[in-house]
Length: 219
Image (cartoon, rainbow, N blue to C red; front, top):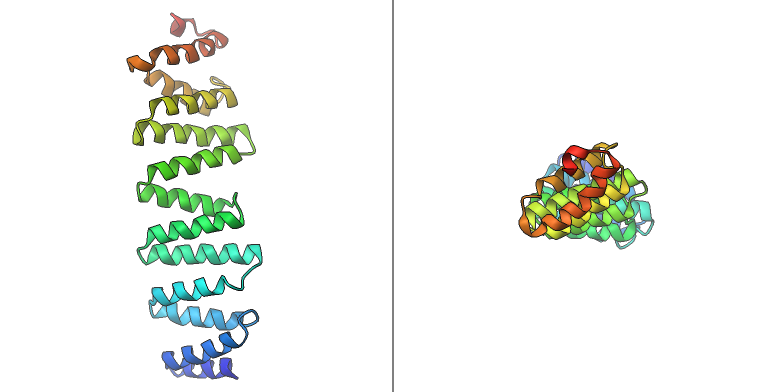
């Protein structure tokens, strides 16, 4: 009855009374009244009431224990928080999503984008290292380690850390037979001008050149 009354008030354009009755239906049985949740969310979205939507989604986490439903809710909550201008809270929400499914691509991709936008380079480096370690294929691992090396070198001025990641790339994929490998070699070569790291770089590059019969570079 409460839900039907909410529908009537919504049809009449009385949003506050509609919300009141939808909430009554929702409070009566939150597990079963998904349609009430959808109706409440619809009206709050139309009214651009982000704070109320955030509260609604947070509250729903108390009874959404199914992993897929919980993950979907956390994703939606993070999106609302981000749209409301609170990217840091969105990041915290997505971290909670990783507790539900640590390898969920949507969660990881969104975190990657938020860390980049917020210029949280250390967090981004940690995330990309995690993705490299979780990678199922050598090419995927190499992709993330190559990206990580760039962050370490350019954003965190950690040259040695970057070199170690580039070395890992050349150990994962063929240095000359793959695009990722070639890019890793090029990045190592670009660092040769850094005197303090030149011996380490030469040590890494020499066997690569030898295996490729690249005598010009060996000389």
